[in-house]
Amino acid sequence: MVKLSELLNAPGIEKFENIDKDIFVTGGKTDSRMIIPGDLYFALRGQNSDGHDFIFQTYEKRMCAAVVGSGYVNSNNFPVIYSENVEKTLGGMSKIWRSKHKAKVIGITGTNGKTTTKEILAGILSEKFKIVSTFKNYNNQIGVPLTLFSINDETEIAIVELGTNHFGEIEYLSEISDPDMGMITNIGEGHLEFFQDKKGVFSEKKKLFEYLNIKGGKIFVNIDDEYLKYWNEGKITTLGFSGIPDIKFEDIKINESGFPEFKFKGSATIFNVPGRLNLKNALAAASIAYELGITPEEISAALGLYTPADKRYEFVKCGNSQVILDCYNANPTSMENFLIDVSSIGHDFTVILGDMLELGTTSQDSHLRIIRLAESLGFSEVLLYGNEMRSAFGRGKHSSSVLHYDSFDKLKAKFMEVSEKGTRVAVKGSRGMKLEKLMEE
Image 1 (cartoon, one colour):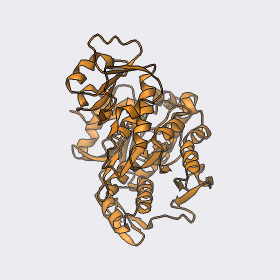
Image 2 (spheres, rainbow, N blue to C red; image 1 turned 120 degrees about the vertical axis):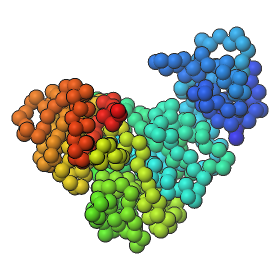
Image 3 (cartoon, rainbow, N blue to C red; image 1 turned 180 degrees about the horizontal axis):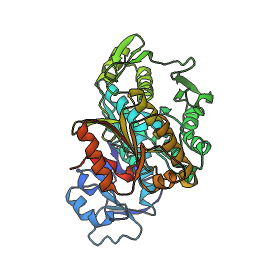
Image 4 (cartoon, rainbow, N blue to C red; image 1 turned 60 degrees about the vertical axis):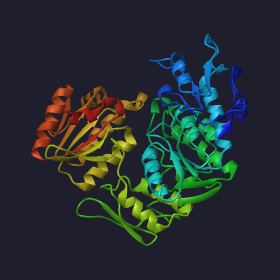
């Protein structure tokens, strides 16, 4: 725990009232429902709610102080810390909090695979270390500070996912999380509405490596990536499936059930996720775990037990069909990888593809490219949904196996029809398309 007085040097603080500077803080929260005695409460204003409306509830739960905006009227004499920017103070206090604890911090970013890599790594490390990791994909300027505040005196390793959709965010998140080692999973076509192209994505993501290089931290380089493979600064461990990396899987094959079998430094395993798509994330997690002293046998055992997170390349049963559900997020890179991976399992799939959001001016060309790829892979059917898919679909001629659905209800009826027949189905689209609702009764 950290004394409140040590956190009061954070940026944005203007003044405070009725606080005990010598009290030990237990953590930091933005959700009044999650407050426990001794927590700091950060009263953030959102689109649908204002955290200042819940200060009384946090006081009843014995929070140590509430960080509030400049205009807050403290008529009830609560212990409050006034800030010109509550979000900025949240980040600053979390940085101090991180510096007061001994935990080793691992930073993970990338266009695709960062959440899956984090989850696999957490599964491996939790067998040997006391860890904390980013909850779900809370990887932004609010989520990262909250992850840091979950570090306590017993924490040995913190796995922190760093997300971005604007320039400058990875640099900021690296500064407050102060990672000791880090991984960029890949450079893909994500958030092109803001980054324009993959060069823009790379210029943003590489800020993690630049921070680690200055600090002298460990850098894990994916040499299969067209941008990352040229990184040669700092304390580097390379990994990949091509060239001569420091870390690799050997004797890779897909068994009759569609699951990858391989060896990691001589230790054999069967990865508990069908297809090849997530092998790169497994390799990233294995590389970091090995650096931290986990044995190949322990790593292999953990990979055999891994279960995908909700809506991320998840295999689920619906009717008489096996469904690959990967609709947490989508961009051209992840969509291409998904389609190629599904085709490696088999071509007897009905593939359902929803819009890829936040692509800006590249959207139409990207959607048309994905439609043509899906068609070329020879799936039984390709069913499209969403405004962007509709516009791209209308720009070309397609075989009778490729159809666009304007109505979600009609798409769902088609989905239920093929699932009852026992046809294998693969579903992918951006989170905003909510394609998981196809599974709901």
